[in-house]
Length: 237
Image 1 (cartoon, helix red, strand yellow):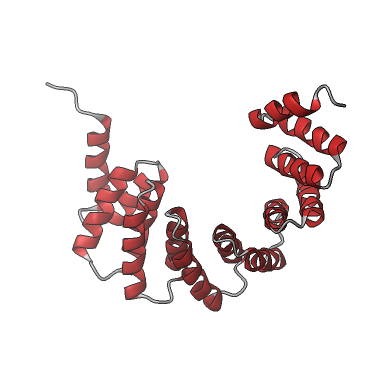
Image 2 (image 1 turned 120 degrees about the horizontal axis):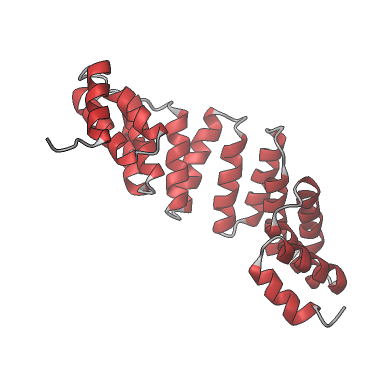
C-alpha cells in the first residue's frame, strides 16, 4: 500500500474532529501554522457555506495579506465592510493593503475613516503619517506621527525616527538630528537611526559626529554606511 502523506492524514483527522462544516477552525489552524494555501481553501469553503458572514471574508483577507496578494486582500476586506461598515479591523487592514500597493491616497482615505471610528488608535495615525510622507505631505506626516506618540505608551523609537525623516525631507536638519537622537536613546541597535543622523550631522557641517555615526551604523551591519565611512571618513579623522 502506498504511504499516505501526513498532511492528508491530518486533514482526515481534522475533518472527523470538527465535522464538515467547521472549515473556519481548520482555516485558523492552518493560518497559525503558516499553511496559508490550505487556510485559503478552508475559508473558501466556509464562505461558500455561509456567504453573508463578515468574519469569514476577514480571515481570508488576512490570509491573502500574509501571502502578499494585496489586491485579493482588498477585495475581501471590502466584502467585510459591505456587510459590516463598522468592522474597524477590516478597514485598518484594507488601508494597510492599499499602502503596500503604494496606493497612498486610498490608504489615507481608509485611515481617515478609521480615525473617526477609533480616534485613540495610534497605529492608524502612524501608517497614515507614512502614507502622507510618501506623497510628500511632510507637515501632515509630522502631525500624524505626533498624534501616534500621544496615543501610545509603547517605545517611541520608530516614531521619533519617522519624525526625523519628515523633518529631514523639509531640510530642517537640526530637528531631524534631535529626533534621530531620541530614537537612538531608546534603541541603539538600529543602524538606520545612526545612518540618518549621520546625514543630518553632515548637512549641519558637523563632520566628525557624522563620521562617528557612520561607523556606528557600519558596526551594526550597514554595508552602505561602511562603504561611506571607508571613502569619506577613515583617513579624515
